[in-house]
Amino acid sequence: MNEASGPVPMSPSSGSPLEFELASGRLHAERFGGKVGLPVICIPGLSANLRGFDFIAERIAGEARPVVTLDLRGRGRSEVTESGTYGWVSHARDVLGVADALGTTHFAVIGQSMGAFVAMEIARLAPERLSAAVLIDACGEPDPAAVPLIRAAVERLGTVYPSLEAYLALAQRLGTIRPWSPYWERYFGYELVPVDGGVRARSDRDAVLEDATYGEEHDPRALWRYLTMPVLLLRATQPLVEGAGFIVPPAERDDFLARTPSARLVEIDANHYGINTHPVASQAIAGFLG
Image (cartoon, rainbow, N blue to C red):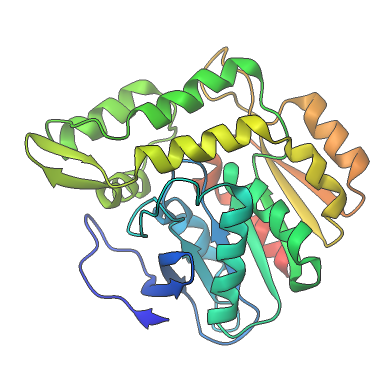
């Protein structure tokens, strides 16, 4: 593990950059808070980057609670590896590798969207190492109406946009990210890199598509039985956009809670993206981790 260097685009976060050299590839990360205590490792969603956890990490980290946010392989500033190296299990092994590099046998995880499924895979692979798991707006199958919007987030990868400002304007017009805030400007500023003709996302389209295909072929509900540690499910009560359905439909929520005795629920008045910057979400996580 080495301290990374280099400026962070847009306004910087309060995290310290880290690099993890794993057998599977290099992972970029940031650490918030101190270096002692039980770490909390944050796992982003399908096409997301570590900046999506800035709001939460800045509010729950402390001197005795380090919070480490990750770019999964193929995203952000982490290494793009060859085809066939992705999937929830591979990312789960990466997170365990990060915990090993941090020198800890026990840790908590916060997984958002696909990151929640990676968290559940960690529970299957090494339940004795997880002290707690927070699942942010994902636990099973989404409403079918939400799937096209998830795919649209993937389709933006590889596309060249005229400028950062043009991309930010487009992201605001789509209406999926609400409320808009400087945290989202920071998120996209981190994600986009200059190329001929404008800017494009850092994240690799093929890597994200491989994970999307993996998700279509695997049922996350098969992992619920491995969640024997304390679990907090944060559910967004607003659809992605009007009429688009929920990432955690009410029926899926109820089934998850009925079949996962260790889980508790907090519902947040936000959508799938806004939940990450909602103060009630960070307060609920802080209280849960205790």
